[in-house]
Length: 299
Ligand SMILES: Nc1nc2c(ncn2[C@@H]2O[C@H](COP(=O)(O)OP(=O)(O)OP(=O)(O)O)[C@@H](O)[C@H]2O)c(=O)[nH]1
Ligand SMILES: [Mg+2]
Image 1 (tube, rainbow, N blue to C red):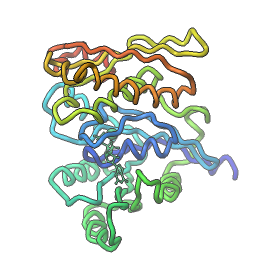
Image 2 (cartoon, helix red, strand yellow):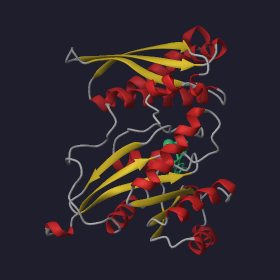
Image 3 (cartoon, protein in one colour):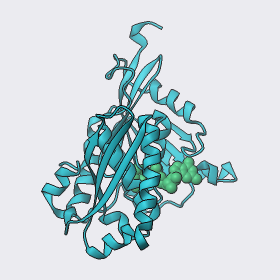
């Protein structure tokens, strides 16, 4: 292939909360760099994942699920979505095809229409759909609304049709040189990935209330010892009662969170990890500029 055929560009993954954007990002990059959970609003800031192939380089921008903003936190989350839409070459609108169309879906579609950018529609979670013919009305609905360059049913979880999706994405990118070196996989510092992995375990092990009021900051990341990386993470909650929930009976829950997170972090670093977690009560951090800046959710 001549250099003139090489493609490169930025691609935003946008959609409602829970559509499977971060699952897809992890699948595409081949490493766990973004938190995934069945709770909505798992992703809070934009996360880039880089895929380098022989014929091109794609910089994926994972974004928070589109929702009505309440706290300052949520306003910043939605600003990240709008920024991403404006700054990329191609949009991937991701839709959970296993649930019926709601106002949220129409709102996301509207964002795509307003952008007038080239877009690919990804119908995710097809592993949950027995009769593939059931996708046809959805395909029709979306193609009547916008000129999607492609419509591709996938399963991000099972890895179905992911190669087809990548091929189609590269096809629709502008020609250009690689943006990042080929061994780069994300723009996220290890510290933030670690925080996200800990937060993911909190989301996965607690009920409905805790996810929204939790943030994680990696305060110590010490690689001095080549055999063992020492990591301290602070878990923010808003009230003492929430701290009790995160810690659990006799510390059982926080121990569980720590064990699961350490496992993922060791996989990522390829090294043994000593992970210490502690819980801090910080009232109303979701509305405080300084706290949001500190946990990396910037304007
Ligand atoms: N069955 C099935 N489940 C999936 C698939 N993709 C994602 N999921 C599940 O859907 C849930 C949400 O996945 P996420 O990747 O966190 O979704 P998201 O779009 O990033 O969500 P937000 O960050 O909240 O906007 C998780 O429980 C995933 O395991 C899929 O292809 N099939
Ligand atoms: Mg996400």
